[in-house]
Length: 279
Image (cartoon, rainbow, N blue to C red):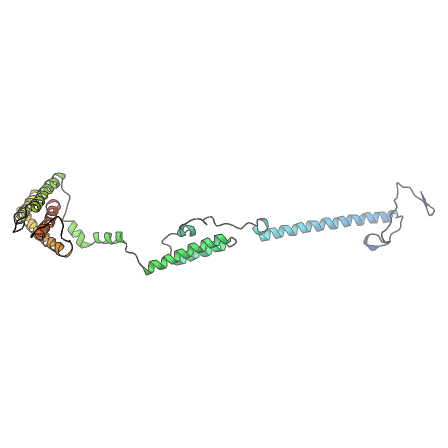
C-alpha cells in the first residue's frame, strides 16, 4: 500500500483519522503514527484506564464510609417498632412496676421515646401509657383509698385485741356440740313461750348453764362463777346497747316483750361464746 510515496503494510500500521484534527488530550496527530507515537499513545491509554479504575475504587470507598457512618439509615429504611405497642396495661407497656415513682415513670418514658422516635404509632402508644399512669397517680392522691386488709391487720395486731384473743381457745368438738344444743334450746323456748314478765326463767337458766360449762372445762368453782357472772353482765349490757342503737326490731318477734326477747337472744349468743371458747 503506497501513500504519498511511503510504502506501508496493512498488517503493521493502520490509518487513523483524527477528529477535528486533534488526538487524545487535544494534540494534533499525523495520519501515520510512528513507532514512538504508537507507544506513547498506548501508555496514555493505560494511564487513562488506570485513572478511571482508580476513580471507581475511590467512589466505592467513599460510599462504604458513608454507609458505615450512617448505620441503619443507609442499609435499612424501616423504623424500629415498639414491641409492646398493643399491651393494654400501661405499667407493663412502659416496663415498670406499679410501685414506681414519678421519676422512674418519666425516665422510662424518655428512654422509650428516644429509642422509637422514628415510628409515630410507637411514640403515641408510649405517650398514652405515660399520660394514663400520671392521671391515675394524680387521682389516687386526690382520692386516697382505704386499705381494708391493712386496717384489719393493724386491728388484729393491736394490744387490746391480742389481750382479748389470748383469753380464748378452741375446745374439743364435743364441748362445742353440748354448749350449742343448750343455748339453742333456750333460744327456742324464749321465742315460743314469752311471758308477760319477759324471759326471766330462760335468762336465769342461761346464767347457770354458762357457769356449769366454764367449770366443766376449768375445774375451778371461783373462776367459773367470776367468769360466768362477768360474761352474763357484759352480754346483757351489750345486747341492750345493740338493740337500742344498732339492730332494728325483728319482724318475726312480736308482742309487748319483743325488746326483752331479742335482747335475750343476743345474750345467749354471747354466753355461748363465753361458755365454749373462754379459757
